[in-house]
Image (cartoon, rainbow over the protein chains, first blue to last red):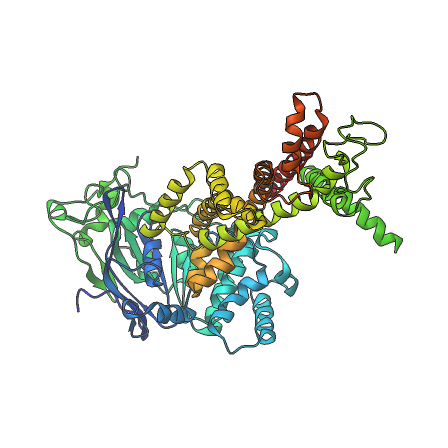
Length: 336
Length: 279
């Protein structure tokens, strides 16, 4: 069990096991996800953080069954998604929903807001009458902070924050057990962002659903998530309880990511962890540590084979051979 | 009462100012249709007057008369009864064909690509020649004109709707609909189709303009004409012989009518295009 992903402290709702995703782009292979295992407990919020290109959004789509992974299994409440027929997969979608990053693009411009929120009910609650659906839609609009009159508007007549609230309302109206939030707040103004996060948290408290929160924003992640998985080049390099990973990061990449985040406290001293070069294209299967070539504390062993995650503390897994020396980073790295 | 009338008039004025193309093109078209069906004509369009043959335009016959003694003005106006509805029916049929074939083909599957290449091959024929051939082989009736319009314009609609639908399918809201659990049919009709309406409207007015030409061409060749009912194409044909002998008015006036019909449809298309881009 040592190779297993760090487990939630509650019964598991979703299990991603050794997920791999290879895309073909103009004859070249892109390994977007490279052997990721992740587990999400009931009522839990798991954050997946990483830069763009780390494969985090692909992972979210795989979890939802929107993409069938090249290898690996996705299990939702004991059912492997890969074993389901198309119709059964459509049926199970009422229990797992998604909120996308782009609020406007994810709403059909030709459909009124009320009808957008109603659609999941039309699909998944065939026994419901039109009047019952409308009542529920109106209650849901109110719940996400919009008024019933918004139901008659088109998405373009709403603000970005309101559009995202519609996306959230559509996602939660069937009371799904899992909602994948793919950077739901990153295109919103800071003031709107906090209110949307509050809404998401309140909804979770009411329904007890789980979230997979995909983000590159560490500050947001710290506010909302129970556990964090840090992705880099299609692999999870570190995962564990949020306080552990953000407070006591053990992977050089996590350290670099944290040090690159601007401080919110004026005058607070930040350590600077430099990585060399840019994030490379994930064009080949790993033959070394993913950070090999960019890591300041790299040793020869790092480039001889892929590095498996190891337990360093309670439910805290790190894929690094140099975990013990990670505190040397500051001494080694020269500020650029 | 008068208040609602003034607000309605004000909103109409606002619409005209915001959409001059739609107002002018649509207005001219409506005028031609109204005149064709309801205008009181000075002479019966199908009652010849043997006493006045090939008369020059004058106070009594403002567009003159033709070789059979028909009043050209009455016939030019009345021909709109046949030509314009026929053009609209042909356009509607092309649109329906385009939606029925274009939307299901809006995937990148190998067989849909193959069908599109077959369509390419079909379109590489000179389609007006093809439709004239088909129509003249299958007989001289009015449905054949509609078929000819569809043969020429159906592929254009298919191509346009497929291309537009393909780009819409890449949209995030389609992925959201899939994630919601919508069936493929629901995605096509509820999510893709409403978003191709704009380009279809523009293409419809362009197609109607093309249909007017196709109808005139076929009528000129005698297809779909039942004398003495007037059509612009057959009138041009009748008058064509007179051009060289100086009776220009018999052929020119129906030609002008064709020109005005096409011009108003093109202005309309332009107006719709602008409105679509503005929104």
